[in-house]
Length: 220
Image (tube, rainbow, N blue to C red; front, side):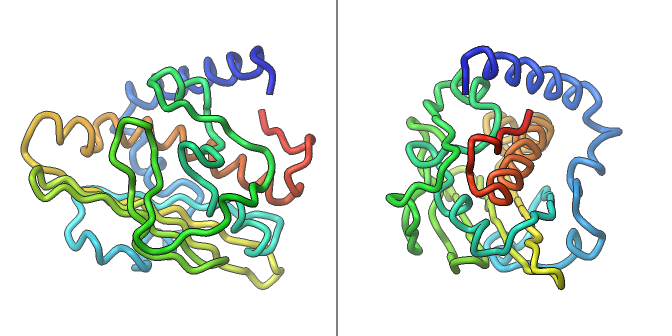
C-alpha cells in the first residue's frame, strides 16, 4: 500500500472515530451489534464464560464469500509482529503499534495453541489464546487480578447454507474502579474507537478471503 493511500485511509478513519466519540450514546446500539442479527448478538458463544459478568460487550458480524477454511488463515495470523490487524495502519502506528498489515497468507503464522500470546502493541502485555479450533474459533483473553480489568476478543466462523462464512467478532470487558481502568477498559472511548477499527478489519478480511489475497483485494 502506498504512503498516500495509508494517509488517505487514516484521515478517513480519524474522522469516523471523532464522529463516533462525539455521538457515542445515540450510535452505541448500532455499533455494538453492527452486522449481527438479533440471534447472533444474544447467543452465548465459547469464551463468553471467561467473563461471567461483563460491564459491556459487542457483537459484530460480516458475511464472507468464502468457506471457513479460506477465512481462517487471515484470522489465525492476526497480531502485532504477525499479520497485523487489517485496519487503519496509519492510526495504529501513530500510537506506536509498529504494525504492518499483510495482504498475503503468512505460512509462519498459521499455528496457534492455547497459552500462546498475541500482541496488540509491542509495549503491552500480550493477549492469551484461551481457545482455538481451526476454521471455527479463536478466543483471546486478558486479565489483571490486581486491577480487576479483563477482556476477551473472539472470532467465530460459521458456514451458512450456501457455503459462505459468517464471521462473528465478540468482545466482552469488565474493569476496576480506577481512572486508568475505566479509560482503557471501559466503553467511553474504547468502544467507539474499537468499532471503527474493527469494522475496517472485518471488511478487509472479507475482501482478502474472498479474493484470495490478490493485489485486487484492497478495500478503500
